[in-house]
Length: 69
Image (cartoon, rainbow, N blue to C red):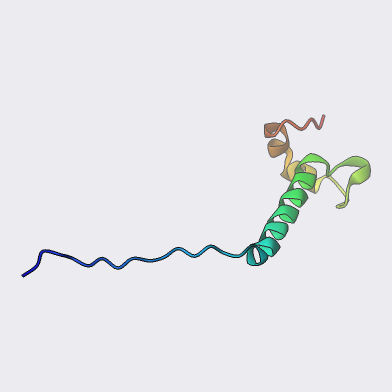
């Protein structure tokens, strides 16, 4: 008998950029939207009326270094 053991190998195939690009754009837009709500959602640029969004992201705003008061 032989001591040789065959191990199956999997070849890695790169994902084409044209398949990744929509997901990269979508993720970038989500990150910009989150940055807007954390950094600028108050005062004259407010999309949501009231202070609900401001109070919801208040601690995260200070954690990231955005002044708000």
